[in-house]
Amino acid sequence: MIVGGSVLFGLLVLFAWRWPEICFALGFPAYIFLGQLKQLLPVSNSAGAALFLIAAVIGTVMQGRKFHFGHCEKLIIGLALLMALSLSYSSNPTYGRDKTILFCFMVVPLIIFLPNIIANIKSLQVAVFIIVLTLVIYVFASVLLRLQMSSIEGRISALFGVIQAGQFLGLGVIISWLYINLRRRGDPRRIFFFYLSLLSALLLFMTGTRVAILAIVVTMLFTYWFMHIDWLKRIINQPHKTYITIVLGALILLTSSFALKRTLPEGVYSRYTSIEHFFSNFTPDKIRYWQDSRSRTLNYFSAVEGFLSNPLRGLGAGGYVDALGKYHRIRILTDGIVRAYPHNVVLEFAVEQGILGLVLIFCVLYLNLKIILRLRKLYHGKLQDRFLICFCVSIYVYGLCVSMTSLDIPRMMILWWGMGLLLAADKIYAKRESNSSHCQRMQNHKYSYFSGDIGIAKGISCNSNV
Image (cartoon, rainbow, N blue to C red):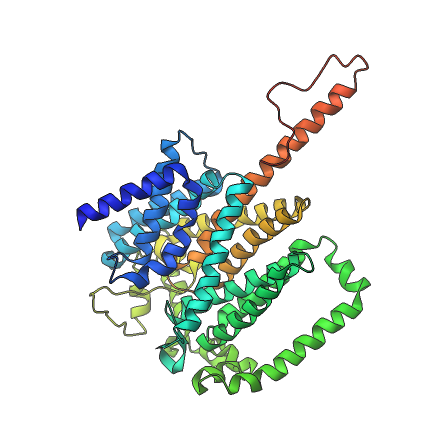
């Protein structure tokens, strides 16, 4: 088995030597689907994805290309080192070790190498195509499996637990919405993605993952703001469109309850019957008496308490179990590992890595916000370019939203993929804009002389496509 695995990995490296960007992008479907093939391939989804990413990095090195890391990439490396160092004082090192290994070998390569491997528009188009195709296959595979896997309160999913299934299905809704809005009228793909969005939304409701629904709304609003510099003027000058949108939204909300009642189990349907039920994890009583709660409020407030009890160095990787264990009896799984996490990316770094971890993750988020604002200024040009930029921004924003009440850090893959794509888009389009501005300055310099003696320097290409 070891020999066979080594041979397969060697072939994967040879493939990456020729097409590193394709190999790297294949890490996305590997994470989703390889875990379902354990009978054929004894490898987990996380390990399989990591192998594709590592092979792509090796293939890129074999091509003689060099890597350049920006501030955000360096901060991610700092978070990985901090997690590794915190294992020395963690009370739950077994789980902390697993989490750190996954973060170092899957999340870190994803963020720091993706902008270096997917380094031009063509390779970004390939990566986007693979991600979209993966989501399309995931939606239809969920239908074919008839969503037979059931969970608590009748929540159903396929190819993952209900939380991750809901998140990926929500991403399918976002991608479909982008295709519908950014493709030309008459493009047959708009019709296909319209029906795909309906199917993804129905499956999403069946999982009972409310945070994904809320994340979709936030991401759509944010993306609309991103796409339109004059968004407020549009709303004021085109009130009829605003009214139509509000009326359609109200009709959908009023009718969806009756439509879903015939489709969903009672336990799932009750999650959508009112605002109070939709936000049932954060009722005033659960916030006031969070110590007795069995919802996300217990996770969040116990994480804050754990951080305040040891703010300088935190509780160590996996050490959040001490903070939660004071108020809740944690179930030990069959593998003997105690898994407990705050379900929030910021709180998890804060409670386990202390004030330094909190500062580093806030710095990462701040730099990403600056990138989004920079890309918004560059949001012009070809239609295909607009779609690519919006795709990268939307995945990141959606991933950030779901990471506020998600699984543990290594399994927040939509956030990490979105962050990597955002950094890649920034590097690609900032470089193109820099080259375009430089060429314009050189041309202006040239034509400022009547004699024309000064020309454009050799080796400077004014082609805007990087």
